[in-house]
Image (tube, rainbow, N blue to C red; front, side):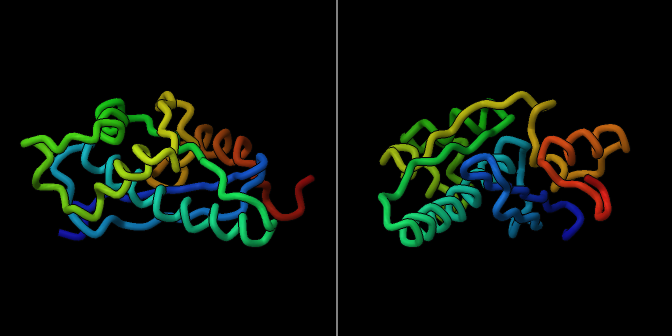
Length: 146
């Protein structure tokens, strides 16, 4: 069963610089790519809320709204829709946290084209060219490079 679980990848760059990232197997087996992306969005929202509160404490400023970029349009719509549907009732309640974050204006969810999804480097095997391109876009360089 472990092989059937999707991987969630999250990268945070407030101010345009990566300050943290995570890549982890999801706790449950998803029944669709929409559900998997929705669970990833909920995970990103939880981590993002904690991080934005920490940054607000450190800078003695107000908590700022942040954006999550999702490449699955069905998951994006699910995040924005406050109504629970019959087809999503099997999704564990904990993952609906993202709906509250969006409804309360804490998080914006935005669509990003799949070929522009930077978190893919954390979730799936990539070809060499794609890997190097995403690594470059994230600002990650090999040790000894400028």
